[in-house]
Length: 159
Length: 159
Image (cartoon, rainbow over all chains, first blue to last red; front, side, top):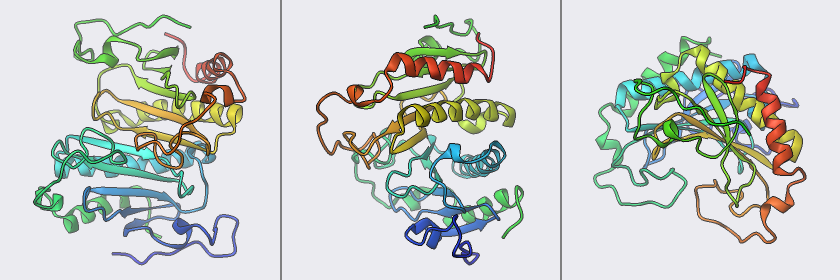
């Protein structure tokens, strides 16, 4: 896995108090000059990735149309890998940021057996899942990370 | 408000069992040939819109890149109106579809005083909000709908 490279500080695009400015925020899978892909390390939802904008902006509409297209290209590439590798019941996408208002997209593979399905991952759990969800994926996380990295590397050079 | 025009049936893009194929799904604000904007009529989150793809597809990555750009253009336009008209604490965007797997984007204006903030709208409520949230918006819903309709009408002809 690559090392995380935060933006140089001081910069208006780097906020020292923001955890997504300071830290990768998960397993760093790939970083370009403008965004990175991390895996969230959520035991209940093992195939949970995030596409994080590198500079500190709060809202999707703070990006230019070209930046939006670049970021959604990465979101779409991650989604496509999850669909191809895992055949999930559904993909969930979200940009919320109420707690950490630094633009990031959640890309989550959902399964009809997961702890919350069909509710969103932020709702109350509906069931306990034993054995661990990660053991039920048809593709291991190392292989999944590698496939995600390859897919998004086709969109932008590594930075 | 316009009348809802479902796709002609039978068509592989029209699923009679799908409520977002059959019905507008809320207050219809604007419809183009390929997507429509509705307001969700959620009392807790009055400034809650959805951009719904007209044809029945389940996943974001089922769209072509051009279709994705068109749909996200509408999402961004709605977001921008909500920011300008309401100055919300945060915008929340999501495409989930676990219950109704017909591609639609939620665009929700969130406020630090709303019933769930900072949790997602799908989590448990944190507080009761009295008086009703709609009375706290600086722009009324009719005016908001009209502004949303004008903004997205600039992107595609009405259908």
